[in-house]
Structure formats: structure tokens, C-alpha cells
Length: 347
Ligand code: PBG
Ligand code: ZN
Image 1 (cartoon, rainbow, N blue to C red):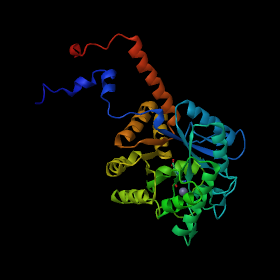
Image 2 (cartoon, rainbow, N blue to C red; image 1 turned 90 degrees about the vertical axis):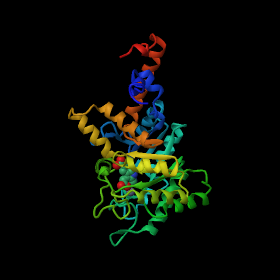
Image 3 (spheres, rainbow, N blue to C red; image 1 turned 180 degrees about the vertical axis):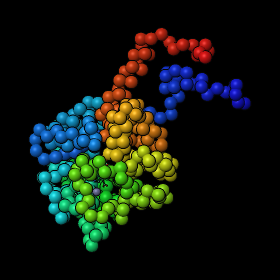
Image 4 (tube, helix red, strand yellow; image 1 turned 30 degrees about the horizontal axis):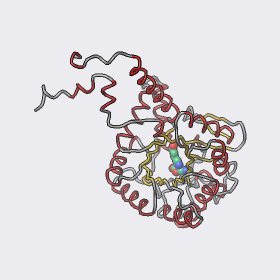
């Protein structure tokens, strides 16, 4: 039985029916908004490559978190841009470090918002690397201690979830152990499990955190973008080590990895729609080549379809706003309008 008995277009006739049979959904509740904390007060410096996103002093960051919450965004992911960097990345685990202070302020002022903290040293190192460098190589086991210290300092400041980002072997195990030893056995870990060595992070380093590496690159720890089996091994190990949520990063060029990860593991799965993805869409929209809002919602929807449970994205606020007005429109149609045209007569 095929055509003409079967006509797939029947279920595409209008938005009401398309909505009924839609297989995946996107809402503000699916988003995590990344925020950048800087020292000072009343600082709200737009990040040139990420228009609509700012380096924020803690007072302004709190306001941003309030707005995000009001839009229905459940969580923020915090990054810090410290006053000073050093060879040991010591600002990354300081009790009065920029992220630790930001966590305290947000948890105090915006109860109910989930505060996730990025656990990595690159923003705090003079050389911009993710951990301790030895003879030009990122020393894995020395850096594990550093990651554990960072995660513990975030936990003590009140972080709701830590997100280890350095792609070190054994980092989830090391952090889980440290957290448990200090009574934080209920604090979840979101692992940047399959994080690829991507040029899509450039806007983040160059302008978001100003932490470009002074030599070398990150290809000895971040993944080779030719590989997919290896991403599954990374995820499997993180799960074994105690990850509660696994992540694929970046998102758009890596949706095959996202799909595979969901199929193979059935774990809570995050994707990180990174700075370069935002910058590409923004640039194309500015040139008048693509419709910003349309392409944004399409990109985010396709991340959900591929298997992501939620999306870390610089688009979070705009997308939440749009989705809210779509929903209002849809419900007003249902209340105010006559029934949709009788399907039988639609040609
Ligand atoms: C690690 C971290 C990075 C990003 C988020 N967390 C960079 C990296 O380690 O390579 C990049 C995010 C983006 O590009 O939006 N601190
Ligand atoms: Zn890093």
C-alpha cells in the first residue's frame, strides 16, 4: 500500500496537526546559559564575537541570572575571567576566586536557578593551558590534583553541579573521589566527555575569556575530530568513573556523535553549542544571508532530534523569548480562532 492511499502530506496540513505529531520539542527548559564573570562592579562588556553575551561583574551577572530565570531557563554555566593569572592556575581554586564569588552571589540572590561550574584551569594559567605543563606536554596526573581542588572549591562555594572540561584521563574518578571524601556525594558531575579539539572555540578564548594558549595546542588531550569510536570510549569511561551527565562538544558539526552517544548509552546527554557556532550564525545573519531567529531555532531543534536532552548555548535567552511568544501564539489560536479548516477540503 503506497500512494495514493498513503499521503504523508496529510499530517503537514497546518501547524496544529504538525504540532500534534511532532517527535521532538524545544523549550526554554532545555537550555543552559553560559555566563562570564569578571572582577569589578557595574561591568557589562559585550563580547564582540558573541553579540548579546557579556563579560559581567558579579552584580551584573546576578541580574543576568534573574532574567534568564524569568525566561524559564533553568541553569547557567559559569566561567571566570580572573584579575591575574599565574603558572599554577591558583586563581582557579581560590576560596575568593571569581567563579567561587559568583556562585555565592547567584545562589544567594537567585534561589532556584541551577548553577553549573566549568572545571578547568585554562582561564587561570599564564600560558592558557588546561592544566600543568611539563616539557611542553600537559601532565595528566599532576593536573588531576588541580582539577580535584578546583571542583572542591566550587562545591564549597555552593555550585550545584561541576563540569570537568579538561579531557584528562581519570578526571571524573579523581573529582568524584574528592567530592565524596568531603561530603559532597550528592553533587552531580556533568562530564565534558567527548570534547573535540575544535577551532570553533576560538571566539571563546580570544574574546570571551582572553585565554589563548601562548604555545602549542590542545590536541594531546582534546579529541581528534576524525574519530567517533573513540568518543564512545571516552563516554563509556566517564560513566564508569561516575559521571551523571555526559556531554558532546561542539554540537553542530558533531551531531553524528550526539546520535551515537544517545543510542549507545541512554545517559542524560548534554551538547555544547559553542562560541564558534554562535559566531557563524551571527555573522551570516549580519550579512543578510540567513534569518537569525529561524536558523537558530532550526539548529537547536536539530540538536534535540539528534539525541541531546539539553543544550548549553549562547542563544538561550533569545531562543527562550521566541519559544515563549510562539507558545502564546499557539494557545491564543486555540482559544480565539474557529477550528482549523476541515482537513478533507484542504488541497
Ligand atoms: C574549558 C572550556 C572551553 C570552552 C568551554 N569550556 C575551552 C577549551 O577548553 O578548549 C569553549 C566553549 C566555547 O567555545 O563556547 N575551560
Ligand atoms: Zn581548559
